[in-house]
Image 1 (cartoon, rainbow, N blue to C red):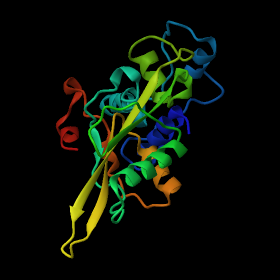
Image 2 (tube, one colour):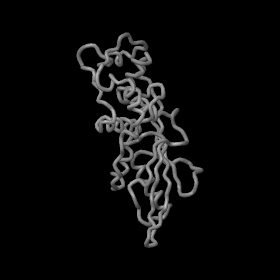
Image 3 (cartoon, rainbow, N blue to C red):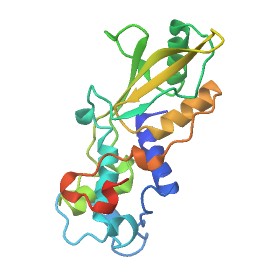
Amino acid sequence: MRLRDIVRLSFAGLIAGGALPHYARAQRNGPSVDNDVRSNRRKVVHPAVPALGLYADVVAWRQAVDFIRAFTAAATAPRAQWQIPAWSGSFGDMPADDLLHHLGAGLAGCGLRPLASTAPSHMACFEAVDSPMVSNLPAPYGRWLEVQEQRSCWKERIDLRLVVCIRARFVSRPDGRVDALADIALSGPAIELMQELGTVLDRAPAPLALARWLPRPTPKLVEPRLARL
């Protein structure tokens, strides 16, 4: 799975789950932003974006753009905002090295590769990189650049990067046995990756509260009703 697919499917999951409003696609006939995509014009005069759904809510639209930007190489930060404690529950009494190898194999099946690591013991990190064109990402991102920032760059490439770190943790049971748990931290809100990892490893991940996977609203655009999400 390419990182662009993880971004696209994660974004689609937000829309389908109601965490973001649906966005209207331009009709094939008649004026539309897609006409400018084909010509790749640098300046756009009066782009035709339907004033409904996601495009009618500037705060939600900006959150959608920030969601996609969280996957850019420039946004990748050592401190991950998206964390899943005890992903998929207990792995029994599996040793730490075996647990990390098991999850690492699952991530490799999803297209990630191990990072040369100086991570502490019982931790391993993995990454995925990609350089798709803007037109290969969800349309609200390119339309934001075109409408709000007045620049058309649908054919430009954007560098994406996702870092995933896994920490093996152990919890003692009352009967003296031990549960091995996997805490996962991600540099971007890779919802689809977590679902796909469960499929590859044949494990059921816990349901995700989709709204919590949206980046924090940009301060100057925060409205009281959104600040409480």
